Image (cartoon, rainbow, N blue to C red; front, side, top):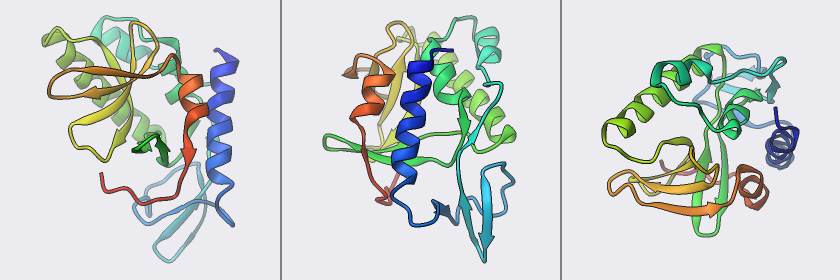
Length: 182
């Protein structure tokens, strides 16, 4: 595993978590088991990231879809379990997607298989989604062919390069706790 990319993800997560007095919290994650949970107060879960040792991989996706995924995709989803994290990049509000637990990781795998299978069917550039935006038809993805982080228009298939790689993308993100309507 590329330790520089892993460190960039952990560094962003640390910056994001440091904005909270105690820990990030969520009502949406209440009653969903996870190794991330620190404590639950009424209907609110307080959490911290859970480092996966050994790291998880997305190998099952590669086997099902029949492609090799960019190494940064394995690192982005295989390093830790965490809640989704809000951020800004230029004028874009983002929600970085993370797996919350083993069950959530399995759901993520199924969603990525569906996404990549659809792209293959439509003869589009294969991408691995990593964030949603407040623009309904756009997501943030890793271009599987180049490793660039792109804004992907789900309707037109247009890819706009945001960063040359995941490290640069994560380092450019501005931490925010803004509730994003996605």
